[in-house]
Amino acid sequence: MNRIRIALLGIMMILSHVALAQEDSLQTENNTKAVTLKDSVSETKVISKRIKVDGVASVVGDFVILESDIDKSFIDMETQGMPTDGITKCQVLGKLMEDKLYAHQAIQDSIVVSDAEISGEVQGKIEYLVGAIGSMEKLLNYYNMEDEQTFREELTEITKMAMLSQRMRAKILEEMEITPEEVRIWFNGIPEDQRPVFGDEVEVAQIVKKPKPSKEEVEKAINRLKEIKRDIEENGSSMAIKATLYSDDPMVTENQGFYSFSKKDQFVKEFKDVAFSTPEGEISEPFESEFGWHILKVEKIRGQVVDARHILIQPEISDEAREQAKTELDSIRSKILAGEFTFQTAARNFSDEKETRFDGGVLRNPVDFSTRFELTKMDSKLYSQIGDLQGDEISQPLMEETRSGIVYKLVKVIKRYPSHTADFSQDYLKIQDLALKDKQLETIREWMNDKIKDTYISVGSDFKECDFTNNWLKK
Image (cartoon, rainbow, N blue to C red; front, side):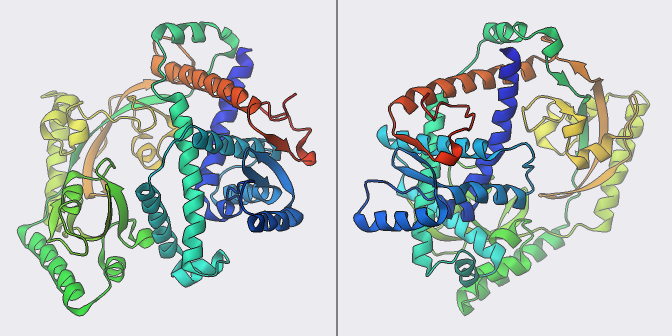
C-alpha cells in the first residue's frame, strides 16, 4: 500500500505538469471549451458537428471532452518542452475529466469568479500573445478566429472555467494541515527499503554588493523617461512601442511592458503605490524602485484590478563603481580568511541583499523555503558558482546580472549533506511535504469518488479499458 501511495505521488506530480500545459495553452483550451448540454438547439448542432469530426472522449456533467483535446494536450506539452514519455492518453483524459468535474461542482456550489478577475486575466493573456506573435491580426489568423470580439469571448469562457476549477480544488484543500504526529505515523508506515532517497544537498550563503550609479547617470535616466513621457503625451506616440524599444524590463519582449494586477499581487511596493494612485489614462512622473527608474501609464481600472504599462530604465553603472564593489568584496573575503569575523557576520554587516543579510547570507530554496538545495535540482547559475568550492573555501568576487541590475558577490557552501535515505529528524520538512501531499491526494480521491456518484459521467468506447485513478467508469 505504501509503495502504491508513493507511486501515486509521483503520478500526481507528473500530471500537475499536464494541468499547467492544459491551462496555459490557448490552442488546446480553444478546442476544449466547456459546452453545456443544456444550451440552445443551435449550440447543440455545433457540438454535433464537432463530434462527427473529433469524436467524444468523455462527458462530465454539462461538459464535453473531445478526442482532439487529448491529442492537442500532448502537442502542447511537447511544444513547452515537457516530457511526455510514460504519460498515456488515459492519464491525460483522466486529468481533463478531473478539471471538468471541478468546474461542474464549482457551479453547483455557487463559487463565483468576478468579471473583473476574468477580464484582467484575459487581457493579460491577450497582451502576452500579441507581444509574442507580433500583432492582433496575426494572433487571430493563428487561432483561426474571425475577429477580436469572438476571440475575447472564447478566451473569457475558457479562463472562467479554468479559474472555477482552480478555486474548487482550493476550496477542497483549504486550511488542510498535517500534524507532526500524522507525519511520524506516515513516515513509520513506509518500509525502510522503500523510503525516499534524497540526493546530495548543500546549504549556501552569499554576500552581495550592488554597485551604485552616479548622480549624473540617475539624472540621465530620469530625463530620458521624462522625454518619453512628453513624446507620448504631446505627440501621441505609442507607449507599447516605446517600452519595446527602450525598457530594461526583461519581460518587455513578451508583454510590451503591460501588467494587470491587484493590490494583493506580488509587485514591489513603489510600483503598486504609483499604479493605484495614478488616474486612468495618465502617465506617472518618474519613480524609483529596487529595479531602477520607471514611468507608468494606467490604461484601465477595473474594480480592484489595474491594467498598467511601464517603462523601466536602469542607470548605467560606471567601471569605477564596479571596481569599487569588487574591491570591497576582496577586502571582506581577506578579513574572513584571516579570522577577523565569520562569513555570517560579514553578511549581516556588509551585504546589500536585504532578503538574506539577516540570515547571515543563507539562501532559501524557492521550492520549499528550506535552506537546502539538492544539487541535481539546483539552478544552473548557482550550481556553476559553488560547484568547484571545497570545504570552507570562499569564492572570488563573482559578477551576476539580476532583474535589479548587476551585482557582485562572494559565495560559500556552509554545509554539505551527502545523498541518503530519508531520515525523520534530518529531513523533517521534506517528509512533512510528502506526507501532506499524500493526505491531499487522499482527500481529493475521496471527494472525486463522492462527486462522481452524483454526476452524469460518460466515457467513450475507445477509453472503456483505461485504468483510471478515479472511478470514472462507475464499476
